[in-house]
Length: 233
Ligand code: E4P
Image (cartoon, rainbow, N blue to C red; front, side, top):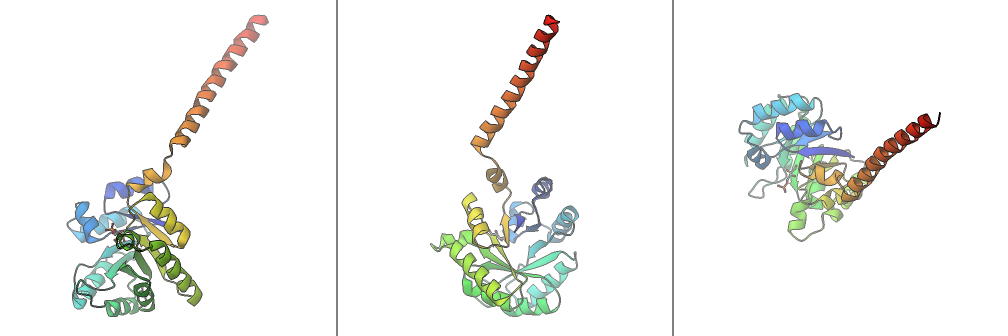
């Protein structure tokens, strides 16, 4: 399973790369805005300089298919690891499967995004998307269970031999990450604030504190024993 960072912040990405657990980066227009990236090309190129060959997902920002195609072709020239995010429908509910299919035929890697249902996932897969972004938090927002969707999509991909990879995004709580990992996500894209929450644990701190104190005590004890031994010679 891979872990991506859901961020456009160079600082966050650079910090997390050092931890050795990051396999790629995803962004969307909301993340870009939040992280102060106003020039998509400049932002994407800065991120690519940090992440090397790892994949970077950048999302198109239009409802129009011709414009989506143009943006996607342009993004793809920025690096071989660019993956273009295409929402499965535009804001009017019109299918983007034709865009996904055409880009895939041209050799542009597509991340079919804003997926909230099993049926959207299977159609995006059949249209050729390399990645299927299932939005766990937004599925749960509507009172549905993202675990079931992730599990069903994974089972369907495996049983029919499709190579598309499930990216679980829209992470809202730490348990979403565990649930995604155990229900068949190939990739989870994690917002940076969740990494410290994933690794830290109060009792681990107490355990390390105990070990450190006992190591100090051992040094004091050995020094005492040595000085007693020297005195008795
Ligand atoms: C990632 O690919 C998604 O764009 C992102 O995780 C969406 O998260 P949100 O539902 O919290 O906006």
